[in-house]
Image 1 (tube, rainbow, N blue to C red):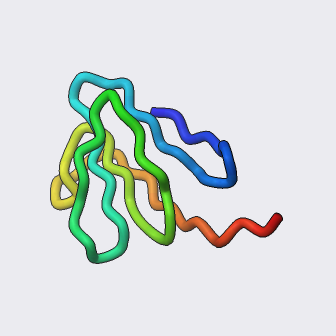
Image 2 (cartoon, helix red, strand yellow):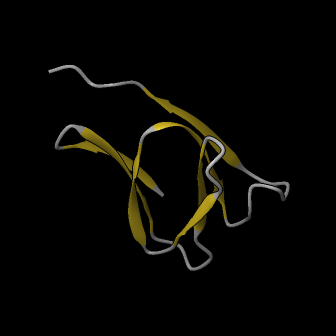
Length: 67
C-alpha cells in the first residue's frame, strides 16, 4: 500500500489482491482492496488480515493539519 498527502489529507491506497483492513479507533474495520481511504484520527492498517488476526500492521495517528 501507499500513504500519501494530497489536498490537505492523508490517503492510504491498497493495490493488493487480498486487501487491507483499516480500523479507526473503536468504529470497527473497513476492507480496502484496490481502492483508497482517507486516514484520520487514530487507527490501524492490517495488511491482508483482520485486526483480530496476527500479522503485519501499521498504527497511525493523524493530527489536524494547519495551513
